Length: 239
Ligand SMILES: Nc1ncnc2c1ncn2[C@@H]1O[C@H](COP(=O)(O)OP(=O)(O)OP(=O)(O)O)[C@@H](O)[C@H]1O
Ligand SMILES: O=c1ccn([C@@H]2O[C@H](COP(=O)(O)O)[C@@H](O)[C@H]2O)c(=O)[nH]1
Image (tube, rainbow, N blue to C red):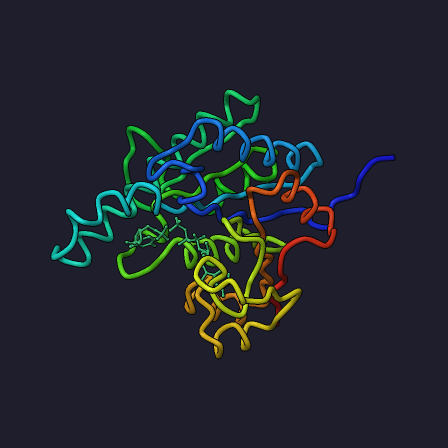
């Protein structure tokens, strides 16, 4: 029996740190291949996929050198880190048989297309995966906010935050073993309880534009497909 996805078009926010696997920085080959395999599963279901990738795996590595730097300059370095991740992701996708395009919010015409909304929409309609690099293109923001923004511009049905933990908890589960996972919660609850799984700007944008978010672990085998099929996986943050 064929499986029917719950969503036609999704925006997947991939944590840069998730690409490290068990390494202390950078991109782990096995990890990126496993993530790409999960993405291929949902593309094969007929779902249109846009991706915003973070930069924590590279930028945290250079953060000591960046400390004391002008904030905007350090943020531009962070955005460039997301472009490196986007190129690595595109390469891994091509090797897995997917057709992917990188569009960057910062102009780097030799290595990536510039972000053009209409063109990105066209690619999605053609079944190509679009990787949005360089965040919003502006310092003082994050790739979570970029994901909210691009998700709204692409008229996606849901934003999926793929991270290292399996949902939103009452506190950071990596620091507090007593933290309890929510099945669902509202944007107002997430903002008022100052839950750090995403930044407040991203939560507020999604709340105001009625774009729900599912937070789940990309390290759980088949988790992305289960989310896309509407099964019980991760935490839903809603209006
Ligand atoms: N209440 C909470 N519930 C769940 N996770 C939380 C919570 N508070 C803090 N976190 C932490 O937030 C992290 C999620 O952020 P993530 O690593 O995806 O960062 P990012 O900024 O989106 O990506 P990058 O790694 O590229 O910087 C989790 O790994 C978790 O440790
Ligand atoms: O719109 C944006 C997006 C990102 N940055 C900078 O890049 C790093 C890496 O992004 P993460 O979301 O932390 O993975 C971020 O810390 C910012 O320094 C940005 O300035 N604007």
